[in-house]
Length: 452
Image (cartoon, rainbow, N blue to C red; front, side, top):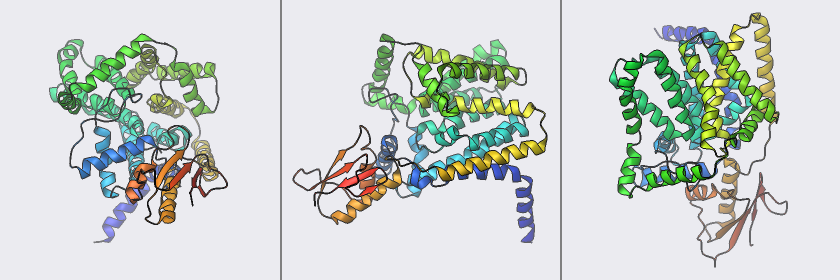
């Protein structure tokens, strides 16, 4: 009897051998040496302290990360609650982010395959997850524990929702609206998903039905903001005022082309070529690629108009965004090229040889990559443990001789290992120095100067 389940598992594994190989490759390229390379900086420390507060104080939080900077408005708290189980499992260890990143990548690769297979084709799904698995920019996006990490998954999952929801039912308009609001509260760039969904609905549904039921979509969207509304009611509408102030400040001085140099940087991280002309040309190429498949299905139409629209969104915004505000573009790019490759009439043997060669090159690059990073969690943990060994439970104070912002992460790690400075200026002062100096004990790019 025991042999039958084993046989079934073997059959299942063999049947999905290509998928398993690609996912294994993708996970390897992301998780190999991840404990030594993953960063633990301002965002990660904020998340860790917030989650610890939620659990230890048993007090749910109603606000999430701020938009743009310390003067921006706040998003909803959903990302903190997504992270929370991982910190519980890890008993508040900062290494919880590794479990989170590993789980996310496994979920993304598996779900993306089956979603794209359902909407487009099995062949396109294979090309998509393979390209995503080996693409350096995708690997870079997938190995940082912060809210923009979820952007590609939320875009792909939106396509799935649009595929399966029956929009004759009011509850599904509410579900979609809530999902769009939830996505916006994960990261503000995902407001673009609302445009994608609206285009899809306008194409698929009769106009009379659309305008009759869109109120339920709006209601679902607003429901996702309930935690922020409760927070505002308790705090004299603080977040709404911050939001209005944000809009007012943005409307005063605008540069409609401020996003273009950032788009050029994003393009260069994809192709290692710094050229504004080529970055704009590449945008036009994606327009052309998506247009080729415009009539294939309704999803290509929605993605085509999304790609056309997003520069208009940044023109209206009128401020310089960060490069990661374009993360939503990458799954669209990969999906477009996956469809293009799938249509080419190439012999299977040649495709296999090319894919194997790309895989070997990616693995080789992974082994060769040896970046010294002052943001590395592993190095910061080594620094804190070394301070603990040298001080041996004696009182000490601490200061930082580091570039702006690079003192982040240490406070939570010290708190976790219970190696805390006294903040008393009369106690011996230990200095953390970045970049490292040869005359002091160093870990990676971080040095420690002791007064004794």
